[in-house]
Length: 523
Image (cartoon, rainbow, N blue to C red; front, side, top):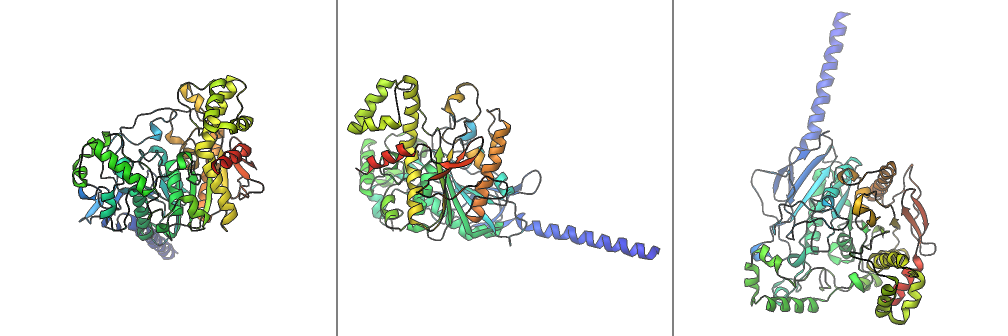
């Protein structure tokens, strides 16, 4: 009897050792990971279930002679590179809170550098053999600011939902979008200007080639972005250079499918001439001399180009033309915008001022617009000013994308309107469901926004939205058990998920005004 007991305990001890050994073997691949360039190590979250790698180089530093060139292969390193902190944010001004955007929505104050081509990975996989769905996050910032180190872009929460979360840097401002005839001439692809987009494409290629080492599926990648990041997503979906790099897209408040307003892009020739004018303005006579100007000095010189262009390479034609010909990459799509995307700074217009400006901008069509954006009183005019600004800049872009996608693609599109007015105090109260306000909800990161007294309904909305997003990233369908039904968008009913205190699919509010604005763009 005692011998049997001893044998049982010995067997149990042996099994326990095997379990411990198995756990050690499973986790060991994430102590170090081999990627393009060499071996890296990272960190883990406090509970140890998420491995985090920050500041992984995906291209050579775009400095010196590599300024204004397509990203080059990463420079190999010896030994184990510690990837435990964000790489520098791209060159831009110092981050200063303004409007509704407190520090939680901005990059860290340092480091900021021209040497900025780094990305970050959060993974909850237990083995490199897993094939988890992958999200690649592209930040906004008007193509002049932003970075992957923003607190609300943290990837841990989505990693806990089974997603491999990747956030990337790309060049902005004059460093990311400067065009010049000399640059076009020296380029092997006979174009210049879209370096920031080429950075994004290089990062996507890195993901394709390396994400399996982190337990990710290189054939199940979703690209996502907000504002300029959303416009970037639109560009990448349109670009022939992205074939095979992703299968889904999430575009939050931004696109370029209407050619007026923020959707208007310069041609390569127009951007080159702007570059020539800039060169003359700062009294520099050669590309070599331009490349010698210190980055912080160049940043201060006004008149440099920022934003994507129709360069004939990344974007062979305008995005509307590419979509009209069905040449875009076919993707499953979530797209939408926010109730208060239109932020008015300063004093709102009076009713008389609003109507006068509307007539100056739209002529005889102003009267019809007033039926959708009324201004009978100053208070009503102030509300309509925000609404038409929202619709002109963002609403018509993402709405048009949903309509084109629904008509022309065999893949589904899901449209949303984020309408939750974020709880706020002081001056923040007036911003409501502001531009970028949805991001912390969608990626389960309310905990990083410290200025608001969050309510139970906010945590419930966060759970719903982040589940929608995670389901879509994994399967192409946001729906799941315990969630309100989100039907695919169809042009005949325009069913839209209204993300508010009680998320519900409804016909799109304000569609008549959007339709009329779009009709004016086609004149």
